[in-house]
Image 1 (spheres, one colour):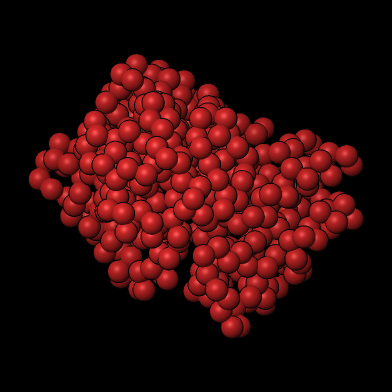
Image 2 (cartoon, helix red, strand yellow):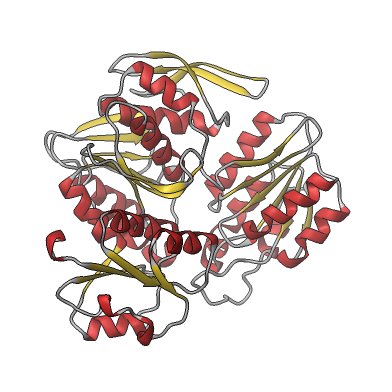
Length: 458
């Protein structure tokens, strides 16, 4: 279906971060935009305010009249929706064009210069950084982000003038194979989603195939030391980056008094005195990747400096809620062992001599089964770990797989406890904390506003 033929767009599973960004794109373009989601959230309510027609009951009768013509309605669905979903079956039997979010993003990378960020972890922060640098520069960009940018209060940036589009390239369900990047960063390839891929080798092969999709004349910016192999087309430039080494890296790193600055080393010209607007140690590496892609896209040294100093972060990514001399409280979306490791390492680097407590909600039974020892090792960098029940998301329980697997493998000396998420607010009321972090990609984050109020009242 050509864009000119589309009059309406219907989303089956509208409330996810990635899907809602696409919905906003079509709302902005003036289409009738409607859809279904399982439960109302702050994000779906905001979409309704912006003009989207939404309902929360799996019911074909709720589909608006404007979305019932297969010749003019594009249907976009998320893989998280079951194949037997009634509305999805209605559209399939009616001959509608039905595409995954990734397919639609792939179309955009064919009509724009796609700046994509892939990797097991770090992609949301890196893509949000890159989008912010570009948006405030003379280059500008469109962007579809995997989190809510604190700079813009949204996961979507629109430019009527720029040919660039920043996209978070998701490896789940091999979605990123629909993309045709002009440039891409690959941040990490630590095995994940083994319920989809089966083996580590298949996971790495998926990334290798992704590098074949980069358009000639473009660039691959690869984290140094990744286990994956790359296979780019002729005419694609390959660069390496890391915090301390590679074509792009940082030097003269200064971390003091809650501030971070460094010099950006680049084959296109070094940029001295970069200051991080969100001063978190892991963001040194993320910003190197973001600046590399922005610089290759034409941003000047001053634009890189200004972009990084004014970047405020992404909600749920090392998201500080309270930051005083007596108490620090933050939440972080980290849900893979390497993400947990980097998060714990960063917070330990920032608060070397303070007692750090994490409340962690594991995400998925399969991920817990596959990596419980790695989770335990990562969390063992902290002083205390409070473990909630596993958040199932799309999965059914697996016998014998519970949070106790992580609990039992924490290193000696780490204080530990098991708790139901519903009991977390009461626990916070009854305890004093020095540095407290809520970790995970599940629904424990829903309690963060309540926890913040409890801690502030103390």
